[in-house]
Image (cartoon, rainbow, N blue to C red; front, side, top):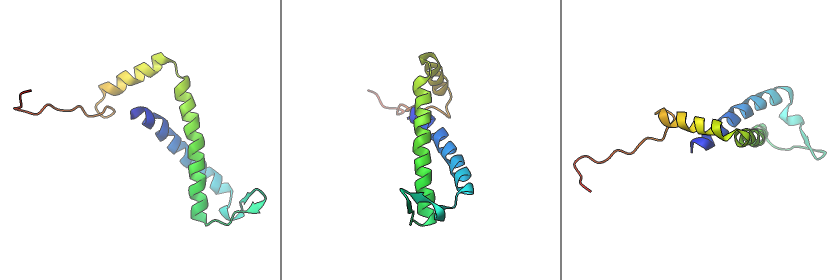
Length: 99
C-alpha cells in the first residue's frame, strides 16, 4: 500500500499546483474542445481538469518509481518498515491465549 501512496500523493500535490496555475490563466467558460465551446459548469470543468492533471502526474510519478535503481527501492522499503509512522501497524498477539 505504501508504494501506491509514494506514487499517488506526490502526483496529487503536483496536480493541485498545475490546476491552480492553469485555471489562474484560463477561464473555464472560455475553453474549447474539438472546436466547440465547453458547455460544462465551472465546477465540472475544474474537477475534470484536476482529474486529468492527476492522471498525467500519476504517470510521471509511476515512471520515476519504475526507473529507480532496485537498491534505492530496497533502501526506501527498509526505512519505511523501520518507521512506525510509515509502516503498517503490526498485529499484536492476544494476551492469555495459547495456540
